[in-house]
Length: 476
Image 1 (cartoon, rainbow, N blue to C red):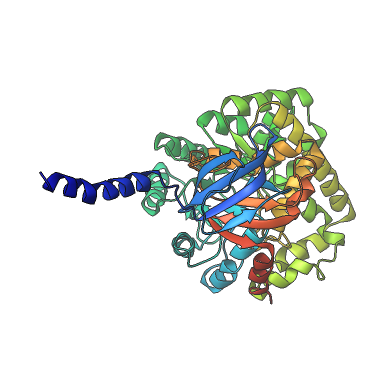
Image 2 (image 1 turned 60 degrees about the vertical axis):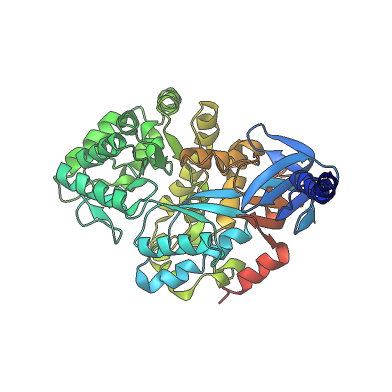
């Protein structure tokens, strides 16, 4: 009989300890308290929120009260928390001799609040995959990278590393290789690809369930590409052509010119498209894009920069010092071309930039998905990684979008396009901890995106001083 009391005496403390252990609150890796959380989907602010993070994921988003246990706590009182920004059009390219210089661009994205980028084709695919692995392992500071791998183009393609196709067999072989590489989408380029190969590539990729984007050859129409299943069109040149009341005759003229010594290119026919722009035709095209879920990447920033390049001295740009000399050398071709332009061409390019700005709010109103992209990368002169996306968002607002709509184009829209919205693009429990803490409200003024207090990527915090140090480390 004396055995039972002794067993109870020994067991009850253990039971109590076990129960207490089950009810102990978890210790998070990082907790941000009293943050104004920006809901990019609704365009509203949820004030005084606590965001708890562990193992690179958001675990809780709750109204602030007593701060939960954490290895690190940041007081975000008076500050605004947004999802990390997505740059949906960048380039890593230039061959092995530029691999290190391209790698050194990665911190510039983080320093400007960009935690995800979409590489739109180049010749550094093995390097990109290596960087991705190092970033995920915490060995390299940089954004999450989605990539198309090599572009698909026609024979004797302009960009090095492109997969050249003419026949269906070549298209199938190219898509096979991209699937073996496990690229994130298919990028089609128009330097030499035929109308038939371009449209057939879209069809074949769609049958495989592969996402497609492209520069459309002017021998085809955007309506045809959209109906085939093109998921996004890069830049506005191709949308603009589809807004012409004479698109069919312009397309036929380009097709006929291919058999002549001087085939018509994009820039040769842009003045005719400008003269024949028709609002009713444009509205019909926008409805088609919305119906077919064909997104548009406007890239207003580079369009404006190139239009102003002949008369702008970039030699004293503060950010030029962070671009490697070998990448700076790739700027020469475009700069020389700009300086050789006639006065009439310069004037037209500025008119075109203004016209492109006017397309953006109409596309948004029609329900077309807009994706914010900078087109930064080697060969694209003075389009600085990171800062250029912030400039793109400012131009989207200047064009007529609200700050909330511009933010959507650089967050949730990109995540949805790349089928990653289940884990990215908004601030919710279960999402990746890619966040930007701002000193001021970006919904009040999109320029407040430049007031970065801290960046969180995969749960790791980089304070503003740490971001500045990160940039100094790659300064030349």
